[in-house]
Image 1 (cartoon, rainbow, N blue to C red):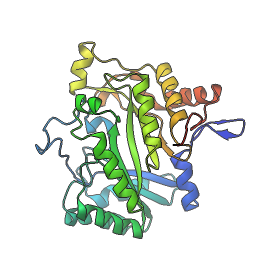
Image 2 (tube, rainbow, N blue to C red):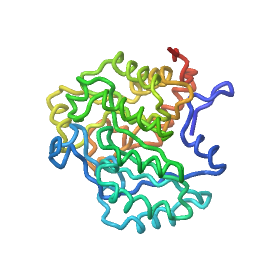
Image 3 (cartoon, one colour):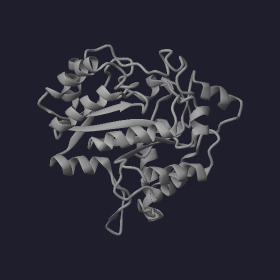
Image 4 (cartoon, helix red, strand yellow):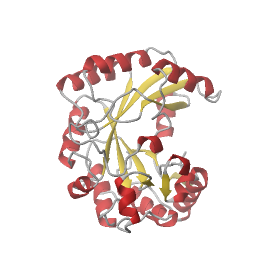
Length: 309
């Protein structure tokens, strides 16, 4: 999925990258591996990040089905054009456990013939030497993408939203994974409390200077029951309008490196899963169409403002 103008791509889509890499359409299917998070089990905190409720962000957050049952169901309901699947361990921190536990989750997935690779969602502080060694082994056997939650490159913001790690932690992890030739992607959130346009553009510039292969972009969403809801009710946080978000996203894209893959332009959630604002997040198709139209009309090109060095 990418916008076009004058025969040029507005951005470098991850979907197109996968199709080119594997020579056929690849469907990314979310799976729940039953992992937890150091920001929820008491290691760092028990409250989690101020914006987080996985039940709103992940369609598999509440499943109790076995891994094989989840994968089998996803393959069976996939469109007929898809015969290749990228298994995506999505909720919580999917490198947070012993290597023996990681093997018990990863290996049955990789044994499924239709699975062409593994995507692992996690945090930059959920690695040790044995984890890196095992991921290096997996990467030599199959396609591997490690998705690191970051949200912002600014430590003051990370502290405010209670991430429990720093920008420096993220940089160290990215560099270590890169030394093992492991592809990384980063989750970034636009519109976080306390951040201005300059903060977000700085994050794009910093990511452009790292060996990060992909960027997954979210808008700020207010979810019921989170600390961010309390701030929103006090008028301390504002949810972005669709028009303002599209303009900010377009500028953000212009500063990222041209070769970085854009995994997503926006996140979605539903009111019955706790979405409070912005309500355009619940109408993904309409919102994506608007964003795509904005990129075309403004002749946006990823990396147009990127400057190496």
